[in-house]
Amino acid sequence: MSLNEKTKEEEKIEPKLGDEIPDNWLIQAQKEINSEFRTINLKFRGEQTELRIYHANPGVEGEASDAYSKSFSRLLQDPDILTRGQMEKLIKDRGIWGEKQEEEIEEIREDMKDIELKVATIRKTQRSTNEKIAHKKIEEYRNLWTKKREVILSLIREKNKFLFNTVEGRAEEEASKVKLSLCVKYPDGRRVWNSLQELNKEIDRSATAHLLYDASIYWAGLTQEIIDELPAKLFFGGEEELENLQES
Image (cartoon, rainbow, N blue to C red; front, top):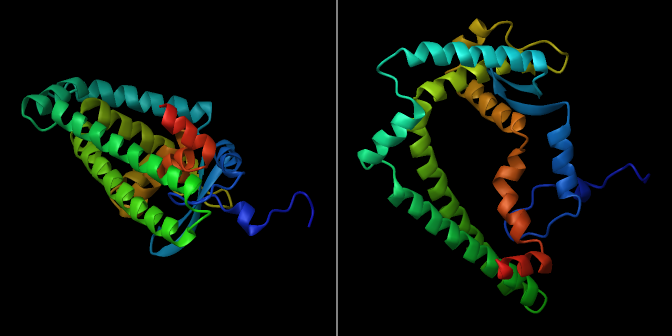
């Protein structure tokens, strides 16, 4: 095997909470972030399809910025649509979202950190002596950690549901749709949508919404693996991570 060839194990970059961390995980993630495009396989227009999401070049960014500005100015004239600041004040005044919910999220995050420390301790002190018991405990903690993470995501989604329906939120959606219409292509280079109007006709379909989500992650410089597994990568890698946790 040549130096450039990788084993299947080396290619794996999806460890779960408490698993051993492949040495090359961050390198793999960095390559994905810096790549020219990200490949997405999904059921699209009735069949399994491979699509590519490309980074937006300066020209595309310019068009998206123009779309945001025009949409922002138009929406600002509508008295029924609040700005983000106005919406935040409204949901706080009505008790929908405020310090109570922020404190709840912070408490859950502290619980998650505690779980992460316990798993890191198990990996350091018990796995070598009684691997079956250690594995069972790690699995229990993993499930608990995942449930707490889902609670946080649910709370954040509830808040974002209101913030999305604001002047800024709708303007950001228009800018993202411009980028999506220009940056999503088939492997042969053809654009999926020849115009923004074509995209708008499909924007409510789940596959298109999924593409918009994946594209937003990619353009932000993240991978789905990072979003799903980053806490596990940082806190469950071994002794160094355990020491960092104990010092924090």
